[in-house]
Length: 150
Image (cartoon, rainbow, N blue to C red):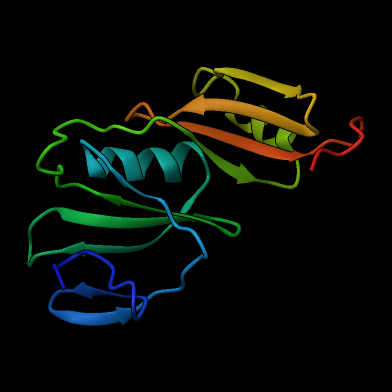
């Protein structure tokens, strides 16, 4: 097992040479962050996530971190993949919340909205933003105004 990388078989990460049990979601994105400290700070201070884990070698900087918002869990790692020196992801990370409009009110003026909040024809009310690495995050909830997409 590589230091700082979760052991998928046991839900553990190595922290200072010691294995620690992690809670896991059925699907947990693990994304590269070009500046791990700034990324975690943005998710915690701006977006309202809670940092629940990190890995660092001795007194060195963290190389892995976990942030959680409700049941949504995202892992970030600070070491670039060999063939991708910059963050790369061509999709959307959906984070389901109780009230998208409340999230939009809390985030207004702190960052630019890519879209929304708006009700989509497929039954979700969404707010789209980008994080400091360029990843798209979509805060979403089911819309009462839509017939309910499947």
